[in-house]
Length: 280
DNA sequence: TCGAGTGTTATCCC
DNA sequence: GGGGATAACACTCG
Image (cartoon, rainbow, N blue to C red):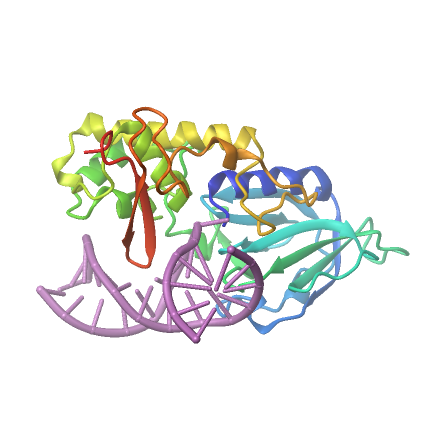
């Protein structure tokens, strides 16, 4: 479920509650909760102080007062909640990190809970290279990063022989864009999802990127998009951006610009939603 | 009962 | 070797 705006909402929530806290009693409850490439089990972060929470694309990581870092990816259905340790355990609780004020706190009041119904998400202990975790190194800058260079991204996409939609989804080009925001950005830019990148002009590609970014900006403001119980802020609150979606999940409903029925087409195990009249 | 779902990546094939 | 397409991963819900 979570794309850039949802992950950013979670990052901000975590930042609010966990900075300066010491991790203790870290525990996993499901074998898939830890990425196979993790260099250590979750207990490796016990005793570490959380100095910052970073994000690139859909990847989150905790900067610790250690050589190692803890990376989190929410996959399709992951949640990170900050909750009292006495709160009822959720059915899909995969791991938890106790939060204390010292290395041996007398009382652990809160914990970070990693909940994930479909288990596509994971946690991973990793080394840092120039401040970036190993598994995040191949991920492109996301549009909200200082280093993001739109000219470079546009020229990279222009050279591709694939359709524009899968190009937007490939995290090595621009990161953070998922199926919802790709559809929304393409609709705003009036570009058909199946047009080949090479056949688009640089200004059209730029329009797609800037449109997608502005949709995501709005979504961050709204606290993310959620359709059901699968996406939550660390508070357990749902975002309300789904009200603002123009095409995603609106098959058969009228386009808000021209009233033509929104169409859905399948592509690579996934759906694209678009307006057949606005997006040629 | 079946299909579809917000993501990533391994593994094919060209 | 690389780009690109596809399947697989697991579980729930309509």
